[in-house]
Length: 302
Image 1 (cartoon, helix red, strand yellow):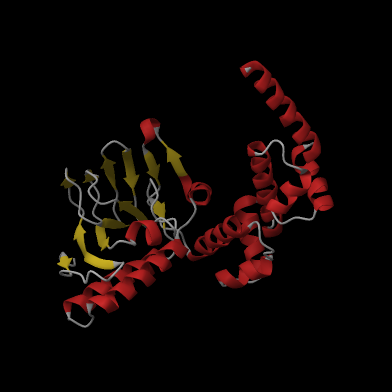
Image 2 (cartoon, helix red, strand yellow):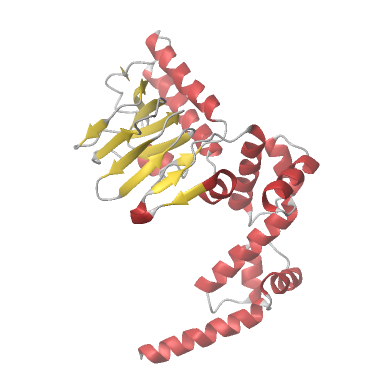
């Protein structure tokens, strides 16, 4: 285990700084007054429950990340048979929340899975050892922690993907319970591919480019999509775009078909054909139906 390591008083000019880092055997944490900076918790091999005052309770398993905001009361209770390790990184600075954590999507309200968890864990422990040897200064540490945050953000597996690929269940009362199995490399590549699709469904993104980005051939990636979703990668992307377009139309009932197609990066005529094949009606008919419902709602309100 790596003892709690406090980095000292930061330079006030640093928008982001490392406050502390370390690991510990899973034990009860009870902080009624919270912690002075953002805390990134990494679970390695164990499982326990985080309780955030006023927000809810979440189960955190192996290979997951959970972030607690500054000065927010929280408690962590490991499961009785859990023998894992809990890593923590304290991050402060004026930009920690608004620029780095929130803008990268890390500041979520529940634990999230990390693809390539052991790599991230190793990066964290290497940072601890560098500090322990006095091999890095505060300004250099700021650069290192910034890069680590970016790497973690790129490794996050979207919750809807983790639900399908790993097996997650949502319990009553806002409690989230997830499997403690860490994804294998092929699943990690698949989840990364799906994450890229969810991020860039509006762009001219080809399956070949996705395959290159995750380190697999198109053929191998398609086999993974077939294995987990029973569709090709191209079909998954197309369905995702159509679903996003349908959701967008629900929020913009007076929009045109062309606008809907453009929001998901599809040519209009092709979009209409695929939309009808997927949902059983043309987007124009759907728009007309939505407008009718909106008119009836407006009349009822008036």
